[in-house]
Amino acid sequence: MSNEVLLGISCGFHDSSAALVGIDGKQLFASSEERFTRIKGDKSFPTQSIEYCLRLADSYAFNVKTICLHENIFNRIYSKNIMTPLVALKSLYKTLKASNTHLDQVHLVANRLGLNANDDVYFSSHHHSHAYAAYSAGDGNDGMVIVNDAIGERSSGLVAEIVNGKLLNTTLTPVNRSLGLMYSLITVYCGFKVLTGEYKLMGLAPYGDPVYFEELCSLFGEPDRNDSPNLGELDIYSDELFYKPLTDKLKFLPRPTNSKAPIHQRFADLASSMQKYLEISTITLIESQLNRSTVSPCNTLYLGGGVALNCKLNYIIATTFKSQFNNIYAYPASGDAGSSIGACINYIANACSKTISSRLPSVMLGVDSTDISQSKSADLLIRRPNINDQRSLEYVIQSLQKGRVGAVFEGRSEFGPRALGNRSIIADPRNPKALEFINSNIKNREDFRPLAPVVLESDASDIFEMQPNSSQLYKYMLTLALSKNYLPVNDKKNKNNESLVKYITDDLYPAIVHQDGTARIQIVSENDNTIISSLLTAYKLECQCPILINTSFNVRGEPIVNSKEEAINCFINSSLDFIIFDDSLVVREDQNPLSLIKDTTTFALD
Image (cartoon, rainbow, N blue to C red; front, top):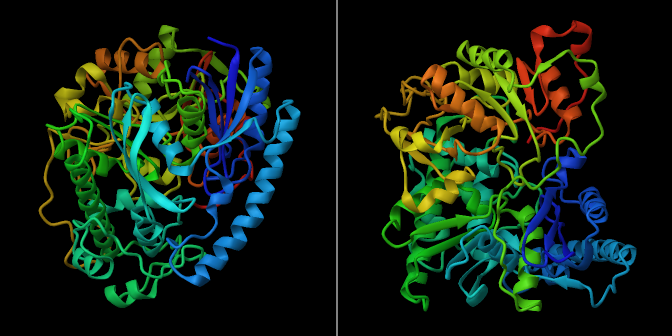
């Protein structure tokens, strides 16, 4: 490849990031700023991520040709699509203040690289960056692009076609019809934080029934219309994202943020209602776009924006359009973090008029386990040989069989919110107590949160009902699969107690099958040269179990561990029994108690 590379930057709203991309589209490095600062969802200018990019560029003698920003920061300013004059004034003030600061920081980076701050800085547009990131994760075929998020610049998404690597026939979605904002509104109403709690709402929905669906339709419009939702005068810049008409319609107050009280059933029902609204609205949008598509045949779908992280929605899309779309793709970091990649792909396609020749080879684009300075804590720990040693492998297998919980820290970190084997906590999914134990003793998080499985590709169809058009989504844990051993729940509500009731819906793998019989699966190949693949293969041979729990290596409120030091700290401060590193195995019971003294690091609750 050429030694010319692009520096991608995304910042300002949520989950800032930086990336290095070759001029052929090869994705060389990408990381969220939160992995360095340890502030979840960090929206600040990604100084540390950029610094790491530039060190890599120096070490490989890359020449940074252009800086690509994920959006035109001055297009964030008010337009008529933002709801009210008051919101417009807030938008204008916040945009001018932040945009000038970010532009100054970009110019400093440009000057450091010897670039012209006017000619060598490329401004993408927010939703085009999302769209091109999604395209880069696919096979390069022409198809349909759907982008949905909360807000970006002056819109909340787009529908388009992509032909020969370029977006065509693009229609932007106004902010006052934002599905992402509506989902965030209900997220806050259920007591979770905006921008970090939406995935909790998705996890809560299967505990409920859509009993408030009609109320949502009455307030926001029917979801099977192309002009819904209508968010009226919602103040998108308020800290609480409070909307009094919603309270008037529901006739109950919002749940306090991060309340420690048990979640009332009505909030699960509200989550279920919102999820149904999202699904119907998106299906309607896709059907409408198919009816006017000029791509023939239109059998490839690209999904972008933060809403593309909604696994249940992606599952519904895949099953609804299984005869229409042969392949569905989403970028693994499809929120704003992935836009540092998308901005670069947009530049290649439009400023350079090239079609990218390199596709996304792997989501392991982050910091290498050997790149960050060695852990002082690790030096104090007693270590066994890595699992290439038969005795170490046998210990891990036996520990998992006994219900113990461990972690994997290997190679480069994953780019995006999902742990996919390199920064993962693992356990046996057959243990009915594993879900409760991991949520309470390891992750220190809400007890309703589901756990995901990682499964060998050769065995996945024996355990789950797989959709042929979703192979890429399965690879990156971006969709669901229905368990073939699903035990339906006929009545989700406890008549005597209105708090949530959890049911075992799969007696073979109870820890990873959710209340609706689905699991957010990740598939890996036996041929993958990774610890997780080798461990699954060995576990299958020894225990006839080709599946493990795979949840992110962190505790509640903490970004996924980035360095060995952070991995050791998480190990010491939680109830993990072991960590599998590239070069060693660390076992809790081997250690001197003095080396396991907990530190006082705390993280803001997400």
